[in-house]
Image 1: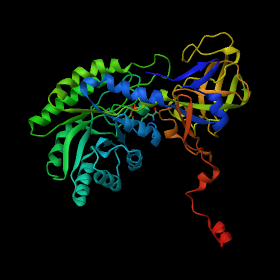
Image 2: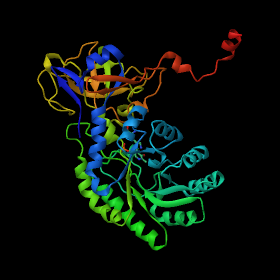
Image 3: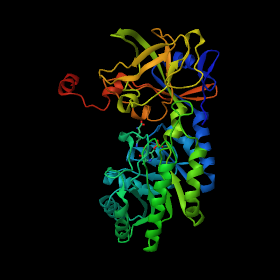
Image 4: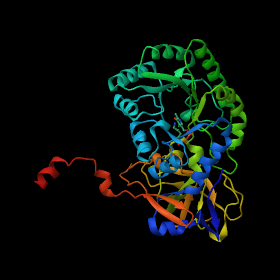
Length: 440
Ligand SMILES: Cc1ncc(COP(=O)(O)O)c(C=O)c1O
Ligand SMILES: N[C@@H](CCCC[NH3+])C(=O)O
């Protein structure tokens, strides 16, 4: 998996752009993306699975800026969306509706209607009630909608946090295996719903191919059962979940996933079936980084704390899931450039820090106990692997404007989302009575 963030002459660059230079133009905190990495990842994943000729539907929730989505479109990939808003993003970026699949346990009537009217590739229903609602809405619109059932295959994956596991018994996601035939029976009574696919998503990240193999074998067995009962299964959507290397070598390559998964699905494809996949993290995580600045350094008991200007409002993953993000100064003192990215680097001269954000929450840390080159107030730091679920989960908590997003293409940097302002914080709020009467 390519990574275009590298040290050149002791200074961190994204492709050919120095992060110091980006800071001078855009300030901190800022999200910086490498177009080459994003593109290479889309192409590399597709190549690894070429034998299945899959429809790759990039998970918009991961990082949904329309400039990145237009890269997705240009690569020939589609979009996996989980809300009307994500559908709007995908269509706004030019992704054709026939390459869009729509998951989600709680779609509103309005969202189902938008999907039906857009004519998307598949609405992935997650309950019998949703299937009935889809039938009613499609009938009212006088349109036929293509659908799949999201199946809960009840497969646990080792190392996947409980908080991000979706495909185990009792989860709110999908329909238990045993209930799926009943949904196909029900769909047969809904003339406007063409139910012809099965969908699964085990969770995120799934650190090895084995859980996919187990889940897909169950799905293929179910496919046989459904076909024997006279139903049609034209597509199997294996969801997302491929890991990203937050530490050097910390994830299997796509070839390793493909080596195990392709043989399982090849007979289905040979029989005319289509495979769909919904990668997110594996595409975007290492295509993006968060640039932040050390504001203050303080001693708290026996801990050395560097307070930076990015916090859980900017990147919530560490505070929410205890996730690991490698971080390092943009111009490390004494040229202490990291030889690779890992939790513990044994270099002489490192000092142990906690990296805290400015938010008024006890969990607002980006990292604990990290050995880093000596930091000074004002230093620029880079938080790596922040392209996935970074900006997408950023908030205005503590009334903090969200950061800008910058897309780098070789030496050229383009602002693809501006920094929010204080005015953005109150933009959607109606004036309070006092302000209204004062204005009169
Ligand atoms: C239905 C669905 N598909 C795809 C994804 C993308 O997952 P990942 O970013 O791990 O590839 C998710 C998120 O976990 C999801 O919920
Ligand atoms: N948002 C999570 C993973 C869950 C993905 C959504 N189904 C993360 O930051 O890792």
